Image (cartoon, rainbow, N blue to C red; front, side, top):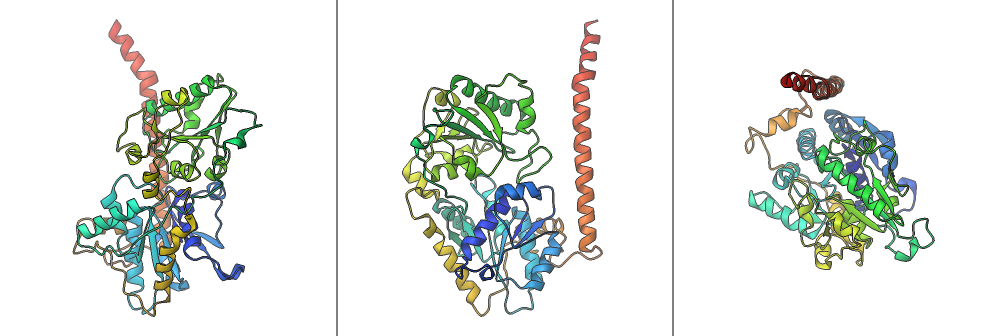
Amino acid sequence: MLADSDTRWKWGALTAHRLVPDESGSASGRRLDGFLLRGRATPTARQLTEVGVRADAMREVTGVEFVRAVDRERYDVIVLSLVGGAVQAMLHGLRHAWQDDERRPVVVTGYVGVVYEKLADGLLLRHGADVVLANSRHDADRFRDVYTGVGADGNSVVECALPFLGGDRYDPKARLGRKYPGGTVVFAVQPSVPDNRADRTYLLRRAVEHARRHPDREVVVKLRSKPGEHTTHIEELPYQKLIAKFGDDLPANFRLAYGNMGEVLDTADLLVTVSSTAALESLHRSIPTAVLTDLGVRETLGNHHFLGSGCLASWDQLDAGHLPEPNAEWLGRQGVAADGPYETWFDAARERVAGLAAAPTLPPLAPFYTPTTAPGYLPGRLARYGFEPDGSPRPGASAEDEAQVSALRRVVRNTMREAARGAYRHGVQRVAPVIRRMGEL
């Protein structure tokens, strides 16, 4: 299994376990080898531990190294849990590596959560895998429409559900006897939504004010990463830094928290978010869930995905005691099965993968994008991960050279970003006041 961030590692590893269950009951019955694609979002050891999903072996690789490794080892199933461009690069790289082979592994890919942007772009970059998993009936219908709309084969799309749904069903009586009898409100933040300081500070301030208005409730801000760590999306303005602006005047019933989302939800009585996939985890457990409308219902925020869910609400409404009631029909179409046989939702995918794995031969991987269908787009996608337009490794650079270049680019990028921030702060704090004073003379 190849992943490029902590969230995608979680989805990919759990998906692999659900697709190939260990029916033997022994440790040797199934083996999961984990590969982490080297890049800006490669998860740290802390992030992997927090996810709570382990592999039998783990190594960090470049795209070329991964293709060479799986070509040597000959796995039965390969799960690509990556951003769309990386999936496309691996598909072409694997196609080239297996071009003379009669037997090859089954290749599976999909999305880690809610698909609310770049639907066509992301889907066509994933086309060519044997199985493209859709986390709900809603997504499966949209995925097939995109593929058939461009004349591509849509039979690879298989409906299932998010692999990390689960946990105990919400019981309001469980909070009785706790320190805060009014319950625990969890605000699940996101790395890139919203994307500006003013909006993020506003949401944080409202969470603090909610704690002040309800001293009988505990308000927990669930953080995604520590400063310096990267996630699936870049977090330029960590909430940990923004909260420092509030000083020491914070209510005792307000706190920040890290940890596995499932464990945080174990004590939640209300989940609040802008558009995080955590909302689906919460709804699956029947925990009251609010998708915030304070900043509008907009595609850039992703909360438009929850139209019709019954979960849209504002902090003002939550302050007044409102608890959203989810729409059962919407839940069913979104792969949220609090009352249904959740485990059976993976049967179709499991059967498809098993059938392909047992086949004597499989046809070559056939991505929709080729040097013929996308000559102005595909080469750039592949070159970024070390491949020529035909899927062969780029000549003149070894995998080790590729890793060094990638690391150097990362250092230069981070240095330039910090320099730009420093220049901006200096301009705002030092230069601008001097100019204003000179203008007043």
